[in-house]
Each structure stands twice: as structure tokens, then as C-alpha cells.
Length: 253
Image (cartoon, rainbow, N blue to C red; front, side, top):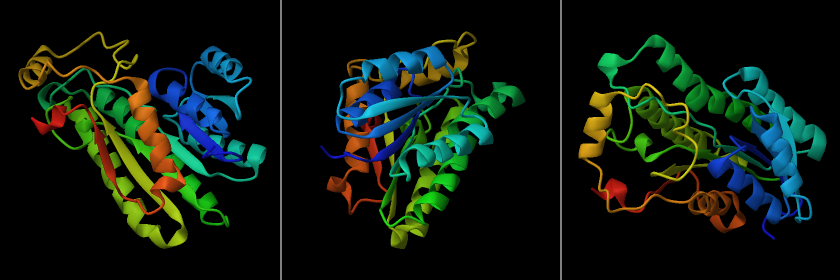
């Protein structure tokens, strides 16, 4: 098992990719701090993990806040004595809204979850990891919207580009401190991310669909989870600052 005895924090763990990531880490022996707003979903996840080599500990909270992002790291250290892996997976969409239609409220909402939350968590994690004898790993989950401009609206695209940038900067700054930082950029994956998107921009959606190859199927949560676990494992010990695009070829268009 690659993560036996490891301490792992996963955000956005109540559904979709985050749920699968949390379970897969637990299967490989990790103690996983599962973070999301929906407490009942986290409790169900922890119950499902019973009998696995590792375990899942629910940590309900809103990852758009500094308090929760720092608190989940403190909780991991208090429960496990260390932090080995941070996975910033939580994210929200922006209804494909182009810049001309973008409200301040939508901009703030997307940036708080997709960028500010991960930055708060990364800052706290690095401060903890730098004092440890063991190596630390940060894996951010961005999007192909972080490497191209034609897969989402303005706010989402900006947030994911920035997350890719802060990943690379962190990897460079802490390369000598046994802290690795990589970013996964998924394409379309079958998750609940579009739930609640009730005010989709027709102009934005039209432009995005015009450039989409509909013959390429959506990915599954396990396609992303396997990449996250690889990036966090010793199999990738010489990899840092990498941008792993996993989209079935969509971004090759």
C-alpha cells in the first residue's frame, strides 16, 4: 500500500472526484480528513470506508473561508501528528459567464472557492510540512480551463489559470524543502459540479459548445483519482511543478 500511515486532507470530498479520491487513499492505508459542507455526506463516506486499510474522518466546513482551510490542516496534525498530503479538489463553476456578463458576486464566489481557499490551505500546509522530517505533497485539482480559454466562463478560467500558476510557483520555491506540488487538469468528468447552475449564459455556452468535440466521452471520477494518487505517491518523487492534463484529448483540438 502506497499510503499506509499517511495523513491526507481532501477537500470537496462529499461527492464526485473528491469522494473517489478520499476512498482510494483510505484503501491504500491513509487516514483521510474529508472536507466538505455536507456533514451527512461525509458521515456516509466515513461509514463506507469502514473495513478499508485506512480510515476517513469527516471535517464539515466551507472551504471558501480561511478558518476552515487552516482548521482542516490543524485537525490532520492533531489526529495524525503530521500532514503528508493535501489535495485541493473543491471547486465551483461559473455558469459559462463571459466577462461582459460577469457580476461582482459571481466573481467573488468562484475566486473564494477555486483560488483563495486552496491558497489558504497551501500556505498552512507548507508551514507544517517545512518543519517535518518527512516529505510533503500538495496536489491541486484545476481544470483544462486552467490551460486554455475556451472551456468555461471568465471567472472559472481565471481561477484555474491562477491555481496552475501558484502550483508552479510553490513547486519552485520549496523544491529544496522536500515539498512537491503538482496540479491535475481534468476535462469533463461525470460529477455534480453543474448542479445548481441555473443561470447559464447562452452566449458563453454557445461559444464553448461550438469548439467542443462531442465524440469524446466524459471521464469518470476514478480517471482523476488515479492521477492524484500517482502524483502524491513516491512513484512521482522526482515530479514537481507538473501540469497533468487528463481530458480524453479534448484540449488537443
